[in-house]
Amino acid sequence: MSELLLSGGTVHTLDDDRRVAEAVLFRDGRVAAVGDTETVDAAATDPELIDLDGRTVLPGFNDAHTHVFSVGIGLLETDLSAADDREEALELLAENADSTPAGEWVLGFQYDESTWPAGGRDYLTKGELDAVSEAHPIVAVRVDGHSATLNSRALEAVDFSGVEHDVRTEGGEPTGRVVEDATGRVRAASYPDVPKAREALDAAIDRYHELGVTSIQTVAGLTRVREHGYVQQEALFAHWREDDLDLRTTFYVPQWQAESLSDLEIASGFGDEWLRIGGLKTFSDGSIGSETAKTHREYAGGGRGEMVNDREQLREWFARAARTNQQIATHAIGGEAIDVVIDEYERALAEYDDGFDPRLRIEHAELATDEAIERMADLGIVASMQPNFLQWNGDDGLYENRLGDDVRPENNRYREMLDADVPLAFGSDKMPPGPLYGMSFAVESPYESQRLTVDEALAAYTRGAAYAEFQEAEKGVLEPGRFGDAVVLDADPYENPDSFDEIAVELTVLNGDVVYDGR
Image 1 (cartoon, one colour):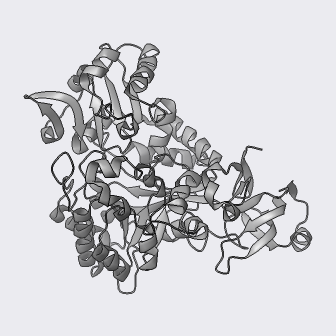
Image 2: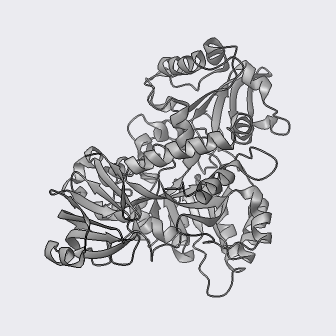
Image 3: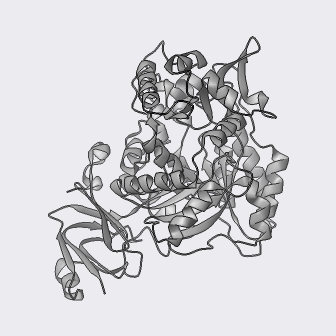
């Protein structure tokens, strides 16, 4: 029997009554007792004792929408998110090229031109990457993952047959920039093999522990990196078999495996407490940053985006999932795409078993209209949203520059989702993967349509995220019998609503064991 006792602090249980305690005891991977110090001490036998010294304990964070391998690969390769301008981004790529054997891929992730100084916010170009190196294929993937820029050698290395429409050109010549399906081809050509993917998974797990995250819901991307199976699934299952998956993981299967998933009759929840199948992940449109989200309004650069998969294709996938009571999580950002997904969800709901609630999910739901929010509430659709996206909602930010100033209070309307009784789950989409960073934007938003209380934001990143994956009986609350997962912070968010992003994670407890100690 193993026991861990945390006492002498503030324990926010986030139960229905929002009980606040002084101590919590974990025994054999579960919460054994919560309450005042004397009572919890009496429930312990021979625990490892940690004096909280006034620190704050919360249920472990649950990232309801992430790409765990992208987090890890970004740590192993070139992280461009810290580049303050295009020159710095190119310098970081050059450093990678200098240490990479000629002919091998140089990969950069998370570049965000929308944050660079005015006058330098164009996408990276083929010519700029050619100047970095002509001896390596180079790709810089935009932060949203829906577009990338390649140098000449990389363009030659990727087969774009059938997706030429997503290869951007000027005067008939490729600019080096690709979007959507063509970006998928690039990822397929440059994606690591299973051993490297497992190395990336280890790096991501360590990073999540540092951030207080004990559970993730990792969703498949657009990319098919080989003809058979899926590298990410193989890496996840290899970690799981060898007891190396030190992070509770729910995996949403890629859309091209819809038929296989249904034929095997694998319903949502198949697996154990460490690795579960969540259901089917599909895409409807692209992203705002890449100007491919299917919107009701026109982008500043022209056009209204695109449907990555049309209504008929979504209808086919949804029907397959419904036949075996699988949950569906669909990427939909633009208002028009969201409307299409709701239409097809409503049709699919009639095909599920009577009395079964599939908790259909819309991932992102950034530009949902009033009508769409009402329909989501009526149909019980979960809004899986990312509070960190508000980092682009400031003056002269991406939302304004792509869609106009009046869109600033009309995107990511978390407040209005909750007020309409839409189930709300928070995640990060790995941009970046820090819950405290993300929640600070929702709590401090200047717009009432977005602004949440501290409690509402924390609930979305714990209880709400657990609900979104059918795990509300196991996660998201610190009460006896639940998983022994918690995060210890150096300050109480309830007492510091205006400095959320300054709060530090000091301890992360997973399955009753300390997996991160940053004291």
